[in-house]
Image 1 (cartoon, rainbow, N blue to C red):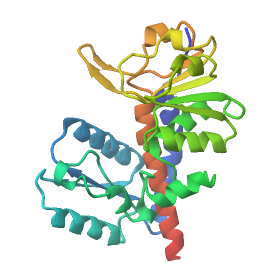
Image 2 (cartoon, rainbow, N blue to C red):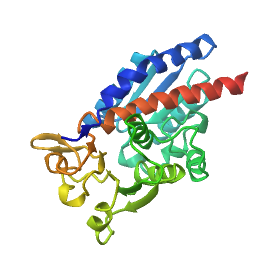
Image 3 (cartoon, helix red, strand yellow):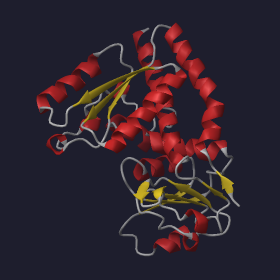
Image 4 (cartoon, rainbow, N blue to C red):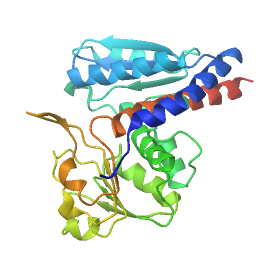
Length: 285
């Protein structure tokens, strides 16, 4: 049986550090304060927001939810973002995606004050990643994956790593981060001609495509590490992109779904919140 890369083990060990940092920032004059804008009643979005609120409560950060009707006028939505951006008490904010169709023409990730961008999607953050500046805010899911690998002593430098999926949320930023950490990275996607050719030679395979249990042992080499970013609803419940039972025949380490990358994403959001709070505090001093 391969090593199970569980988020809980890491979070339980690291939570006291985040709680202490949160308290320290408050003592220095600025309490970490996360504002979340949720538009509509998407059940998955409500679940994600609830998890973020719970984690804020655990570390002692303030959490403010702006829950808006799905038919909110664009002007009201923009006015709220402007208010949050300019509120000196707010140290981190984001809009929970997806948003209703009538607002989707707005590039909301670029409307967030970059100093308060805890999601790490602003172009300022992308530029930092491109330039190899990895000591600043990093998109949450990629950051969680890097933490997962490091805390489990899985070698990144010099490793051959295949990422399946090229979204701007996971695949693309993760490829930049891993390259900055001296891995050799192959970014595969729906037009990749022979996916197995790439994955079978990889030390680490990271799947983020949203296809339930498609990646099985036939895609892997013996002794590989498998990171499953996928969250897919099926008749038997939530499953990842990886056929877990099959993949364990070859993998030496693997993340479960649920309980793997998902909680690490929320944990990384808290780390980013503390970083943005620290930055704002220094700018005011």
